[in-house]
Amino acid sequence: MRMLVKANFPAEKGSEAYQSGAMQRVFQAAAEALKPEAMYFYPEDGQRTAFIVFDMEGSWQLPAIVEPMFRELGASVHVTPVMTGEDLERGMKEAAA
Image (cartoon, rainbow, N blue to C red; front, side, top):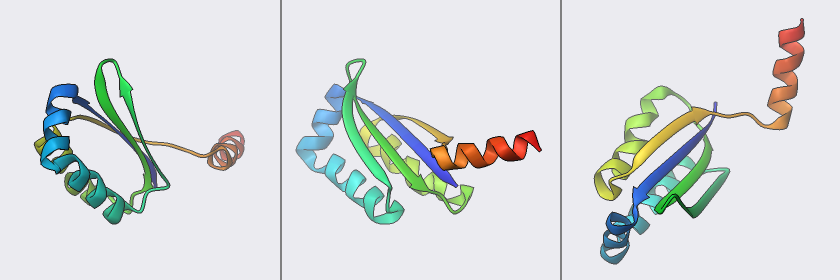
């Protein structure tokens, strides 16, 4: 299932994580483990933010995905299923049947 992880982490904690190399380790490990479709990084509401889209095999993957973000970055993490336009079209056809 295609999932979206949005992680917000405080600028100060993010700066400390950047200086120590923790931020780079967290997101490099996420990229290697998840093979994401997309990863974006941007500021939002005064916090550093990461946006990751990937295919999740099962809910058992969640702790390994989010725990490093909590522990190393002090992140607030939101995980939600998402669809492509093709997924939405298929779902709408099935809903109408």
